[in-house]
Image (cartoon, rainbow, N blue to C red; front, side, top):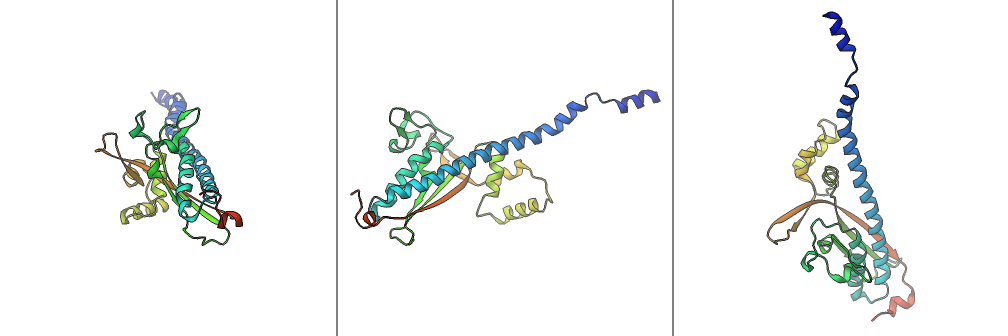
Length: 226
């Protein structure tokens, strides 16, 4: 009996399976974080490009038209990475055609909430001595499970007292990181569902980029476009 007990304790049968059971969930969550961060970096590059192109396009018109011109260009660029969760072939479930229609290709999918995601700011007067300044803020949906909600929680600017306590506990490592508990505190964008009655909430982060372009004398005082 004693020999059988010693043999059982020394046996390594099933050890690999047990290690896999313990390690796989952790590795899978790390994989989800890697995917979400990759999406964030790609989107941030597009946001930066949209700010640059918004400033360039606004440079060719007068002060009153600059914001609308830059907004049109920025939304047309950011429509590629909008990633709106709900979409269909119906016109009500997509952004305006002037932002999403590509000549010879068709309409970009998943753009329903593009207007709510993009915010463009250009000063009415040339305050910046370096040239025209265009700031683009883009609310990016974080749709990767688990990772998206956790990232949106830590990226949230205005936190309630309860949320600040949770963040402090996590920073001090006095409490385990539990995605299920943090889900209710995620930074969420509220949008209307397909039936216009149901309200949906999606985790997001705000990506911001500012571009300043020097304005040539000719376009500063005598805009090319009317």
